Length: 192
Image 1: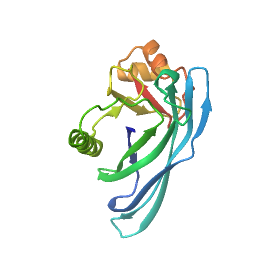
Image 2: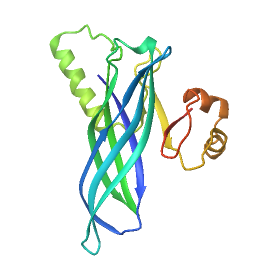
Image 3: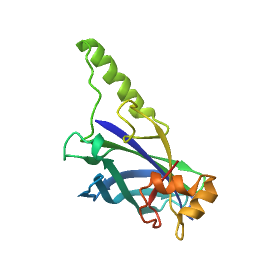
């Protein structure tokens, strides 16, 4: 199983004193295409925080996901994304959320070592899972296990051209990385 990290900052007018709870869930639909399997749908983030004047406030945010697993990276038709761990921390005017997604159904590298070595690798993977600082690419070629990507959340009215200009990247590469998908507010966009 591979992992993918999604990070998002939510800003609120309230002065937040404490986060009481945070949880994430998905309502993804899986569509088989010529290029592979696409996971499309919302990533729902819900929680409760306490304001400086001791009011409990419930919040809900929705991120639209559109993730393509290319055919050459699939080991079966059982490609799926599941919320693993969800963590939140207070920032100046809001909440910074980190969500670790478990990615199933992709080709894994074979480990041909003794049981002790396998156990050490699994422990290292768990530590990496807990402290990953970038989005892990699960779609690189078979010789590359991990690659970092930067992802942004699209704003209302964003286009490939406006995002490319804002982040100083080539529009054609931006379109290619995102498979020419439609850009909507709160869509996750991969930066080249």
